[in-house]
Length: 444
Image 1: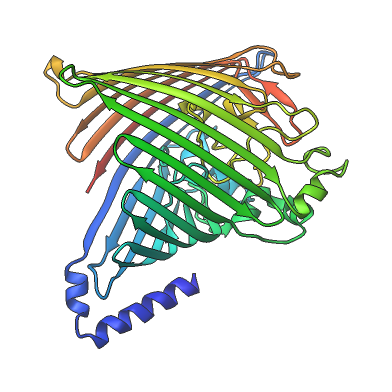
Image 2: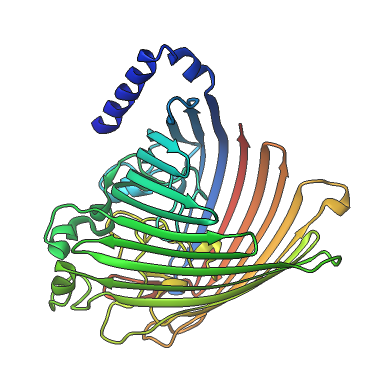
């Protein structure tokens, strides 16, 4: 963080030398949100053991971004989560679950400077350095609980018409239930970092090429982490509006390939390795289609995580990316993005899993209550690997309301045969998981 602070001081000195410091900050903008979150999670393992946990938390974000001077901007965002009225058994997924995994108090709220960066822009080129939110297929903010995940490093982008080329260097990651910016590879592997990679720490180099002309969208992302793994994500989307009918169609396709490289490829192959002697070789593809008519939308998707006998074939997603089209609310990889849980997987992301997702969303403005929307989604995940004895069935129901800067949502989540895989690929299932959420948010 001292490098970020140094950059802030350097940029401020430039402004002062130009006698424009006051104007630089006068043109700045404050932004943020205030959020209340309630969550309750009930589990039944089918063997007479049940559990119930819930939590309340209040918090949000407060950020500030300066105006532009010589192409430079400074920005910072303060983030906080503050639990209250906690029961004996707490659902820490909206508080400090990742802190708890690393030995801290998961029930304790925290505050953190989640963003602090310098942004330089000139013509078609931009570069940021520091701590920042980043949304890509495999490294993401995943801002569906109290706070977002953020990264530390630098990213550059150049725009050439509808094409964008990006590249960066990332060395730290703050998971959304933590206030600690941990080395990005250590966060993925935890205590196994040196055993797997041969190093105590590492970094990720993301490179991307994207195209978007509002009809066709193309994406190519590569994430290279020396002596750990390389991940390639390809995506395509086509959008068409049927003239005069009000109908809009969107179809998409995706492909993902991951493999261990360098020291990790050799070390994971050892019989006593964390994966049980399996090198990482994982792949997946998916298809989706969405048809929209006025306030109504129907969505269908299919994904397949390819089976590779003898390899660790589940997707490795330690930095809050949940890229598959069949991803459900309950299939987010919170547990895969926890410290040291990179080789764990759940439901849609387990090697050999085929997923189907159907969803219907209906705006309810016609009732006279503007901003009201209901969504119902169903998914099934099936797999013939040992331990995946029954197909997982998911149902998500969401009733949301949005008016201006205020939003409110009620979410119900029901899962039959909730399925997870450990680092060696061993699969286990819960009989059922039920979850309820209440979320109120005001953005400014």
